[in-house]
Amino acid sequence: DGVTSVVPTAKVDALAGVLERVGCRKGGLDGKSRPEPVVVFCRFRPDLDAIRAKCAQLGLRYAEVSGSHKDGLDDDAKMHPECDVLGAQIASGGIGVDFTRARVNVWYSTGYELWLFEQAQKRSHRPGQTRQVLNVYLIANNTVDADIYSALARKKNVVESCTWAYLRGEAEQDVSGLPEMDVPEGTVRGEPVKLPDWLLTGAPPPREVPDKQRDAEAA
Image 1 (cartoon, rainbow, N blue to C red):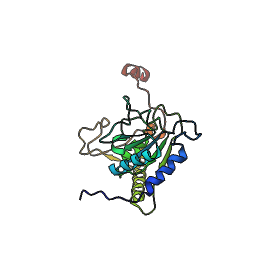
Image 2: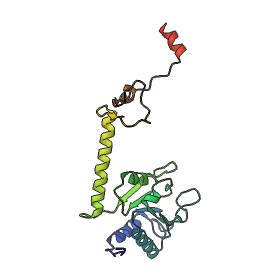
Image 3: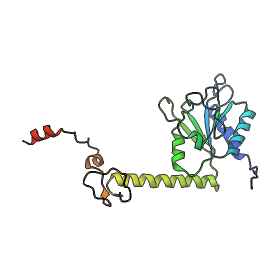
Image 4: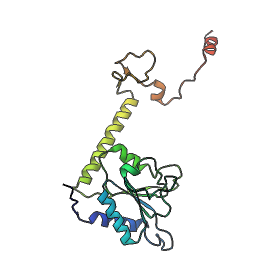
């Protein structure tokens, strides 16, 4: 109906506690350093607004990567150096950006899209990251958040099970109906495509031998 309802502030208060514990505060962990930079991933606009307000209350510099804001990025699509807390909307901050300046990611809210969730996780796991990355998930029992993370875990299990089954040769891929797909020579449309034995066993691929050399070796 276009009305935004105000919900309890327990989650944003929990975020404030996380920021305090990881050193994202004035003076850092030792009281003499800059605040530890943190990326907070969200799905909804009201979540970002709540985080912005909390950062203002805590005296932290907030910037954002969302559908309406890009002030959290520098010219190289990296986390801005003058930002303490980066609010990143998952659909906007999950692809093509570099958050390696931060080693702490807080997951404030997310959706059911596994590929977006995994892409967003990789924004701090990129070349140039020299520190161990910490992911913090704000989840309460018996909430939609708990249901979403359970669904993501189930999707992940299905994907990995299918992938490993295929690599072990236990599953077959039907190429019927995919006329643009490149398939091994001699394959009949509608028949399953098997991965080569050398890939399944982990052995190195066979070396390519020119026709003339192959004929000479056969002789």
